[in-house]
Amino acid sequence: MKHLIAPSILAADFANLERDVKMINQSNADWFHLDVMDGRFVPNISFGIPVIKAINKVATKPLDVHLMIEQPENFVEQFVEIGASVITIHYEACNHIHRTIHKIKELGAKAGIALNPHTPVECLIDIIEDLDLVCLMSVNPGFGGQKFIYNTVPKTRRLKDMIIVKNASTLIEIDGGVGLQNAEKLLQAGADVLVAGSAVFKSQDPLDTIDKLKNIGKQIYNV
Ligand code: DX5
Ligand code: ZN
Image 1 (spheres, rainbow, N blue to C red):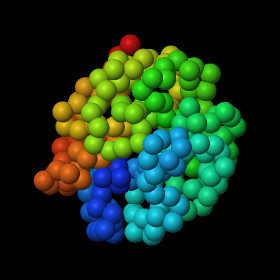
Image 2 (image 1 turned 30 degrees about the vertical axis):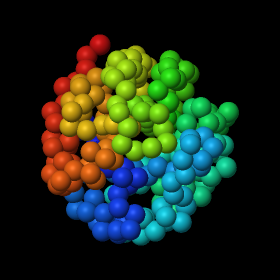
Image 3 (image 1 turned 30 degrees about the horizontal axis):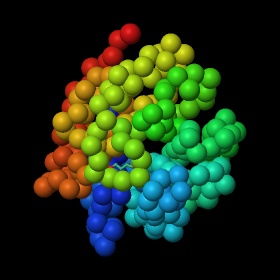
Image 4 (image 1 turned 135 degrees about the horizontal axis):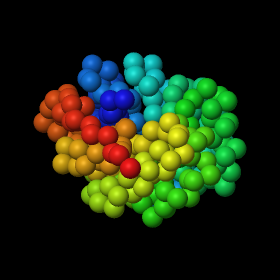
């Protein structure tokens, strides 16, 4: 599978949100990455249900919703209702991951788990086959524009090994500080989905940056 590019709307111009959503519609990007923050799980508040509902009216590509909120199980129904195609909850923010993942799937969306930089991928060993996606945070969640944490590269490889050994079809998504400078290394390590906020929206030519990210060659990582 060719890798996917998911521009993060957190870095868009909120005063011109419709314009930026339409720009992504016309680009070679694959998904919209939408960061929901509650000011408790992460030290920041971003946007929530009404804004995503409005984005869904204009967006023509799948909505990849990254819930950086405590007790996400209380909200997954609403996010599916307003158009989420992928819902990712944090391992560190939910006591009943298995139940919540299956709830998301029963509702008809794809289900993902995100791991903070300090959380080892090995914690997923008993649930990896149930997951459509694992999001490895390559920054501490809460803000766009942070520096990429390099340990994410070997961590991606370890996760890829686990997926291969388990014969699972889980996608690996990398989120935070991703751009043209590290995309190739991440793809070689096994990444399938690259989230890019600042790298896309703060670049001179976002459409061209998306093209470049999309056209990076992928070499399959062999165990
Ligand atoms: C961070 C968010 C990211 C963020 C990425 O908490 O989960 O999705 O928007 O932004 P950049 O690409 O600017 O690091
Ligand atoms: Zn995110």
